[in-house]
Amino acid sequence: MKQLIEEIALPNGLILNIWDASRVIAADTTSVILIASIKMVLKPEHFQEADHYKLTTAVFGQEMLYEYRVERTFVKTDMCETVYQELLESFKANTLPYLSHAAFPEQFSRSKHREIMNNPYRYRNYLEKDI
Image (cartoon, rainbow, N blue to C red; front, side):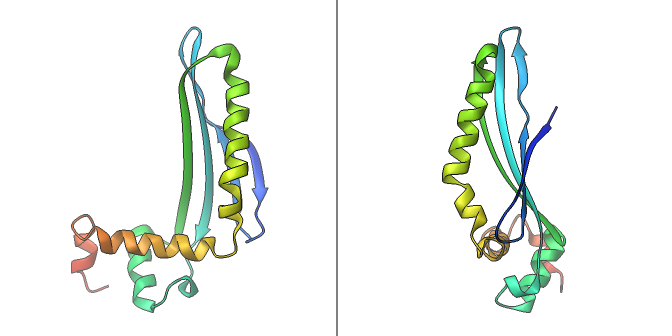
């Protein structure tokens, strides 16, 4: 079961939630899972053209979820907390500055539009409609 560990207000106005989703695999073995997520609202100013905004929201909705997940399997149960803290420290040192950047919401929004355009077969139902 996921447990909220920390909520961080980022300088760009977004809220980062850090979860512990670790689970027991066997009596003495655990899968240590860290999940970081950000919910953000897509805004027209994130896109270069109004049509890009319209298509992206038609496919993904108004609210997007950024999710980062890292997992270490087969960790001895008595080492779970230590391993989770290592994953958390690594995340904060390496990924948190990227997520905190002022341009992150815009870049993430545009990446979702690129995903649609780079995978036309996957999103053909939306691309064939006159959105």
